[in-house]
Amino acid sequence: MGCSASIYAVGKRKKKTDIPEVVVYVPSMRIPAQSDLQRPLRGLIPHDLVDRLACLRNQIVLVAEDTGGSAVAELRRALEEYLPLLIGLTKKEHGLEDLVEFKWKNLEDGRLENSVANSWFELLSVIHMIAMLTLSEANTLMIPKDHSGSGIRVVSSDCKRDSVDLLLKASGCLVFCVHEIMAHLPPDIKKKISRDFQDGVLEAISIQALGQGTEIQLGLAVESQKASLSVKRRLACEQLIYFGQAYHCLSESDMSNMHGKKHLCFIKWKFLEAKAAAYYYHGLILDKGTEPACHVTAVCCFLAADGLLSESKKACLTFCLTAPVTRSPPLWGVMKHLNQKIPEVAARKSQMYGYLLEEEKALQALPDLPDFQLSLAPDDYILPEIDSAWDRNKWEIQSQPLKEHLKDSEDEAETE
Image (cartoon, rainbow, N blue to C red):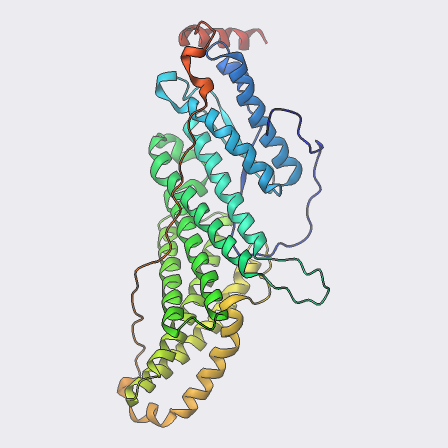
């Protein structure tokens, strides 16, 4: 993607009136706003390098505004082309870290959220946007269009696996933000930027992406005749651990804003679904035992799963109605299966072993779920190499001293 004019018409985009469906949760997205890169960098780096930086950033602004962030592939290409140039601004030897004031706004309402003179903040924002676009793409893959008119929507196994890959990539981007970028931001900047950039929030989204990847894998296991009960239980327990960790991260962050509250509702909903699945599959395995105590404990698991399933439906409704309002898709994956099986098995088994429940009241305790080592891990995100245009040996300008440059900028401002 070069610096030619955007293929999208410039103008105000129409507001979407439809309520979006959510399978993969995508937090509020931020897009770059128009920022002046030319004046602060004039005379300090080659003119063509300044032009490329400004041109690529402006292109991202135009595409994001004109498409509402829906042109995922186009935006990702532009962001990835911008990154090698942007990295040069973060290098201490160039002395340019705090010269440009980078502006970012909320995609939904167009409100300017951040205006920060720090190139590490710009790098954080760019990689965060790549992560959000990747989550958005994963969500799109999990919500197919029904072209037949039958109302039945089928997500192919390939789409599900591709979604898992995208979730791992998004998770890796966010881990990189937390461990490799946040440390470069001064405390005063961390305090004033959006709450979505808190370490705990970034970590929570990264972990929840792994949880949703495990949820998709569990759905694939349910559809496979080769997957054993032990495999399904393990995946359900891993999913539960991921969402428990994500909730812990959020509980230590400031989640008082609108999107923060909705994010918490999503985690609670998915946590309850995962817990219901974990107890259901744990109960099935316990029920294979021959001792009466095994059947009693299994029934306790089934009844717990039934109660958790009911709670998860309420949590889903709360999530959907919490602003900004969203829709949940038709039942899919493991929950499509369990919404039928859990109530059915709980009723049948409690009736079958009702006499044992009466006789063995001391055993009516919900067992601990087994602890498993987590299988999914974020993909490693690696920054691209710095653009060769930053090689000082190729520069054909006399670098203007920083003090003189700043004085010139002040003089220009006074004469305007």
